Length: 364
Image (cartoon, rainbow, N blue to C red; front, side, top):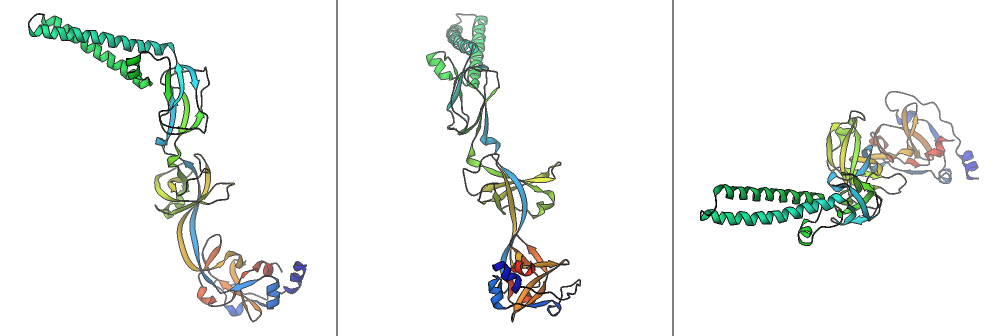
């Protein structure tokens, strides 16, 4: 019923309107009559032009990432059979926690060689020290002394090499020295973080260097944003970033931290590194997002975008005075998704400008 009434009460015809390069004068704009009751019925609201904050921004997209030092690929330093597997993707583990264990005959031989070399070193050390004392009293030949010294030093080098190899592989060398051979090699977490991927099964034969787990530490998530080369001149360190994830009804905030110095030849973009303010379970590594980098916030005289009409590549707003609607020519400036700056705001002064309901006037 309201639509029918509106069709009746808001029926008017615009008379000839000049088209010139410059904005028209108010006197030449078309006019029509509309009572206040009709305005109220159509919910057409007026107000003088006022100041609003208009945000200028660069639209872009990016992905949530973590720095290289917060990622870890857990590999098998030596090949072996998986004896025990712990943890699932999503589990949080502390640095040094055993993730899985490997067994292999070669592990036994490596430890055996180390322990045998320790015994040999001890014997050669005793012989060397004894001959050193005999040499001091001329009770042994220099040749015999030098041979004992050489054998002792070579044994030291061998033990040191075997010890470092065991340490590199992850064996508990101190425990082996005190308690003897261990049956399995424990693979431990190199960082505190979350299990991202598990690539092992119980009983799997693993080759040397195979990736067993992928881990991430989410304590330093950041934004990696691609900005087109043409827009990079507007970007500065410290500017506010507003970003949102498709399907999530929330706007997250951050700031520009680093600006890349290289243009990607394929995409013609430059990488921007940003930090965000709020930690959220919704923000995970690899999450793609849309973003706006706010390059300026200007407070200017502006009108709602919906109140501005365009005809023949010219722009107007409606003034309402004495139950008369008059089209007022506008000169537009910067704009955002809500408001547009009016350069000739002085021409509007304190006029009552239609700011809501222009749709009804245009559709009738």
